[in-house]
Amino acid sequence: MAGAHLLARGEGLPRVDSAEGVHVVGTDGRRYLDAAGGAVVVGVGHGRTAVVEAAAEQARRVAYVHGTAFCADVLDEYADALAARLPVADARVYPVSGGSEAVETALKMARAHHLARGEDRSVVVGRRHSYHGSTRGALDVSGRVGLRAPYEPWLSHAVHTSTPQEYRCPNPDHPVRCGRWHAHHLERTLAEVGPERVAAFVAEPVAGAGLAACVPPGDYWPAVVEVCRRHGVLVVADEVMTGFGRTGRWFASEHYGLQPDLLTAGKGAASGYWPLGLAVASGEVAETLREGGFVHGFTYSHHLVGAATGLAVLRCLEEDGLVAAAQVRGRQLRTALEGELADSPLVGDVRGAGLLVGVELVADRASRRPFPRSERLTERLVATAKELGLLLYPAAGCADGTSGDAVLLGPPLVISASEVDELVTLLSRALRALTP
Ligand code: PMP
Image (cartoon, rainbow, N blue to C red):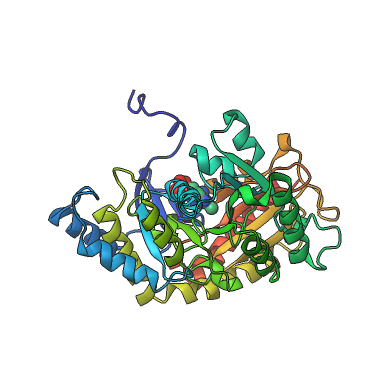
């Protein structure tokens, strides 16, 4: 049987044939509106010839050299172009092959930075409900209990602090002093392990992966950064999902004036045309790493085709004004969803920033009661929407009373006004089909 040797992917799935703009076409001719952007990956749209040609041109000229033997103009050019866009002071860029590798790299950078300064800091603080990747270090920082549990015990040591969730904020006085409340929680978490042992605090500026586009209150980031700085803890902004225009800014950190010490990116960086991730260090951190002799690297880090692809994606984002477009289309999408789903008993909350939009599903709208784990709606909604020709991204959601289940919308930033309307109509139809 064809495909019998492929592990863990493929069974029962339609076969893909091609894709263009915001649409994906199956081998059976069915056309899907890609409201998920794959997995919130495809920013500049499917079938971008300029990106494909830039990648092919680099592959033809020279696809691969090892980073210990050569540097290349395309790497310098890409890093310089990125540095002008990144919210990191005097940014230095380390290209890798994806989000998890970027997070692993940043974690090692944090540890190495402190060691080079004579400080033995090995603990990392993540947040509850968060997701930062599948590798051992990145998963350890992640706070999603269900994903972590099978892989204990951990090689490293991470602890988890509270995370802002506007719809289900753990602050009993919400929305009063929410930022201060979470900063206080972080302070307590640091005190429990000893702040002098903590290397870094890792969080998404806007929580995409774990909590379906939860936007923290305006005073959250200044308050937690103040706590981190006071204790010498590095701030790592995980922008794997939120980077490259997704939230209507180049990077979501900009919404808060956040200048992290380290930043991670992936997904939209190469828009799905190449497996590309980025670990970014501030000039100050990079300087300590250089002095301390940072030992790190993957066979595929600093890949030339990755850099050429990333550069072409940056140009598309710039030339097509896609960061501003994400703001405008995102606003249209949220407003239309709020209107269209206002009386759906299954929808508790519509939230997000730019074209990163979460729709939280509840069993009871008045009490915000989530569906019990065994009755989660997410998977059923994703399947029903797919039948109707709409691709959704199943978001986390613990259904443990502290968060519900949810779908995430992250369409390509090239989506048009009429395609946004089509998306809303299809989603609304799928929800109606599931309403008892
Ligand atoms: N960090 C965040 C915030 C993510 O959303 C993801 C992927 N969903 C990752 C890290 C891991 O990235 P990858 O799957 O490319 O390894």
